[in-house]
Structure formats: structure tokens, C-alpha cells
Amino acid sequence: MHSEAVASRSAEHRDSRESRNGSTSPLDAVSLAIIEQLQEDGRRPYAAIGKAVGLSEAAVRQRVQKLLDQGVMQIVAVTDPLTVGFRRQAMVGIHVEGDVESIAEALTDMAEVEYVVMTAGSFDVLAEIVCEDDDHLLDVINRRIRALPGVRSTESFVYLKLKKQTYMWGTR
Image (tube, rainbow, N blue to C red):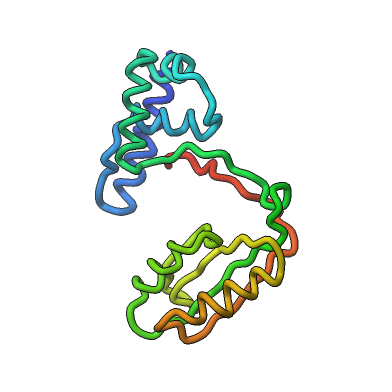
């Protein structure tokens, strides 16, 4: 009974996505339900997921591996940067002259850069940076990001306190 509700809810999410962007997700309702289960608890046993979505443990294991192999999802440990020695975080807005994608690609190669997005707003690219301290942040921005060919200017938004960090948006 519960698996039918999960599949039905995921089908509703899929239908609402289809109406918003004109195409369907390449994932079926069961795969979406598996993703939701793992977003709630990335360590949830495959047997428990199978019970929730109406599949065997082996079938869940195969589907999860396929989702991982296709790059649809990752299963990772999310840390609090402060507790593991990274005392400075910042979002850096970047104005680019020329090819935005080449700048975004160069940023993805930097270990300190956790998040890169090309935007249509005031900045061409936003990059979230996690550093050990202010000197490290200065080095990354001044010597590495600003040195990239095509970077016209940057604006840094230093985090004073992180109030919410979640990856629980589900599969809507």
C-alpha cells in the first residue's frame, strides 16, 4: 500500500514537471521514489527502500547502481565545513568577457570551489568557495580566479553564519 502511495506521489511530481518544462524526466516513478528515500537517509538499507517502493533488495541495489553510473545522483557525506577545519566560506560573483563556459569549467577544477553555476543575472558565474581561512580565500580569489583569462571582475559575499544547508528538495 505504501509503495503505491510513493509511486503515485512521484507520478504526480513527474506530471507537474512535464507541464512546466514540456518534457518528461527519463526516470520512472520507482526510481524517483528510490531517490527520495535516499535523500531522507543516504544510509537507508536497500531492503527498507525496497519495502517502501515495492521492489526486492536486489532490484533496488541494481537501480541505485544505475542511477550512480548515469550521474543522476551521488551518495556523499555532507559535512559542516567549520568542524573539519574550513573556517571561511564565500559566494563569489564573477563577470566574464567572452566564453562563460570556459571560466565555469576552470572553476570546477579548483578544489576549493564547491558549487559553480552560470547565471543570467547580475553575474555571469557564481562560485561557492570553502577555504581554511581568510588568507586562503584571498589567494583563491586574487591569484587563481582573477588570473583566469576572461574574468573581468569579481564580487565576494563572505558567509558570516550558515543557517541552512540541505539537499532535501526531493524529486519534484
